[in-house]
Length: 278
Image 1 (tube, rainbow, N blue to C red):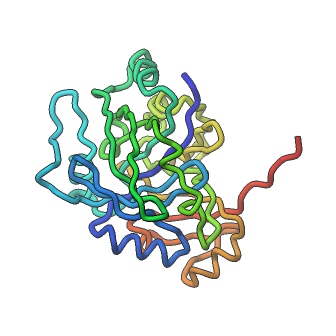
Image 2: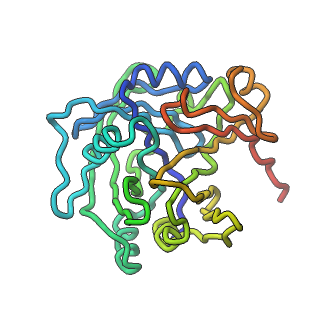
C-alpha cells in the first residue's frame, strides 16, 4: 500500500459566507463559493499541496441518500451538522490511483463503497471559470463512527491549484497534522494504518500515538465520540500570524486558535520546518 498524505479536511458550517469572512479575518485567503452537483457548496483554503474545505448545505433537495453500497458525501455532512454541529467531519488523503487504493483496502478487509467521479465549476482568480474533476473512494470503520474518510485523485491539478489562492496574510503554508479522537484509540489503529498506508508509532501512557504519513502525520488521541478536534498548519512566521489574532493563546512555539472562531475545529499554527541540507 502506498503511503498517502493529507489532501484536505472538510469543515462543516451552517453559513459558508460567514465562515469565509471569519477565516479571512484570521489571515487566510478563501476561494469563491462553488456549488457541487449533489447539494453542497464549498470554499477552499488552498495551502501548499493540501487545503481546508469549508462546506455548507446548498440545496437539500439535491442530496442523494445513503443506499446500499453508495456513500453520499452530502448526506453524511448533513447528518454530521444535525448531530454534532459545525466542525471537521471528514479526513481526505491524497491518491494517485483511486481504483488501486480501493483494491488495496479490500485486500486489507477495510470497508469500501462504490467509487465516485464528479466535476464542478471553479472560479479562477481572474474571474473566469474552469472545470475541475475528481475521483473519490470512501471508507470508514466502526471505531470512528460519525466520521468519514476518503481519498481524492485529482484529474485537473493545473486548473485547481492557483498561486493567488495559496498566498495567505498569516503565512500559512501546509496542513502538517490532523488530530483524530477515538473512544478506543488502539481499536482504530489497524484502520488508520490501512487507510493511510502509514505506520502508527507506539502509544504513550495516555493512549496517544502518531501515524506517520509520507510527510504529514495523524495524531490519535483518546476521547468521547469520534472527532477531528484539531488541525495543525505550518506557517512561515508564527509571530506575524499571532499578531493577526490577539485572542490566540501560546503553546510553546505554536499559537492556538480556539474552535469557537474556526467553525468547531481548533487550529494550531506551528513554525514551518527548516529545509534540511542535502
